[in-house]
Amino acid sequence: MSKIKMIATDIDGTLVDDAKNLSPKTIEVLKKARANGIYVVLCTGRPLSGVANLLTH
Image (cartoon, rainbow, N blue to C red; front, side):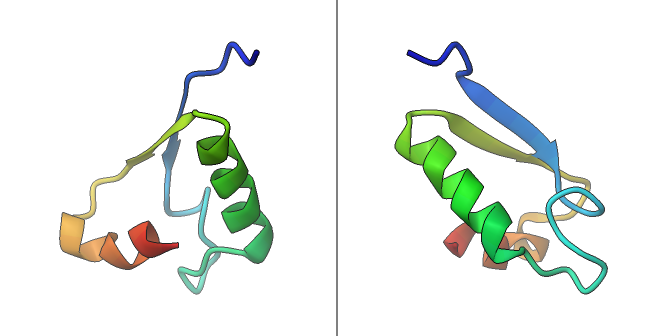
């Protein structure tokens, strides 16, 4: 059993590239974390409307 319960991460310069895109590898890793019961929390100064497209992956 994993001791990791949550991943909190910034978006710009961390999850997305300069073009504001998520890489397929990043999507894969985050989906795997969620499938293993790990919460993924996006930390950003952007408004919700500025990250809504990232929440659908």
